[in-house]
Length: 287
Image (cartoon, rainbow, N blue to C red; front, side, top):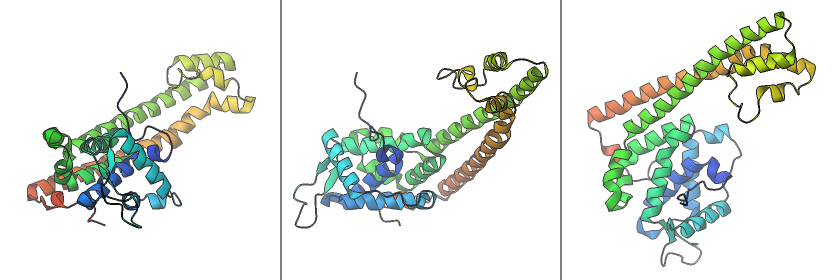
């Protein structure tokens, strides 16, 4: 059976910016109401959300061209996710669009899925977005599917999913730190015993710490290196990566977990305060 279409079906700018594009399309649709939105509206919201994510600082010079937005909208029309707004294309105004119920639902699903597949920053953005605009999002979804979305569009549930993913990453990094140290000790012992490079590579490969064995065996690429580089890779490189790469990433991941704990506390405070006003803000009004 053919899989359902995806917003990021093609590689390139859309796939790299799926989260902010999905949010930008929904925000443009919600802010325009019945008049339809323009490609420039979508681009504005994408820039706005990218700014919230600090992307203008992290990736300066990265621009979204209006032609790219127009091509994306035409693709959404072909998918049945968007339609041209009837009678909205006046002189000089350009074509206006609106999302269909199917399209809005698909974009919400794309946004929600980001907590499991995108960056930490995007996961936090999604949690914040849903916490602020949940009722409006549900309102804009098809009536027959809104009950199910009430459960999925739960900021606390999304935060839990994001936390579990970060915990899995930390578990993997912790294991890699430990296993790298073990391999480094084993490699040093084999070197002292005078084991040749080919046998050494096979013995290290058998320890199972190399995660790309199914792509290219450890011995296959290490033994092709020049002597000095091969000597490094079959010994000190394991401890080097453990100390400078995996331990640093593990520290950063622990920091992410602490940040999510604080975010969870802030969400709980809002719930206890009974402050639902933020959930009723129309998309597009907050800048």
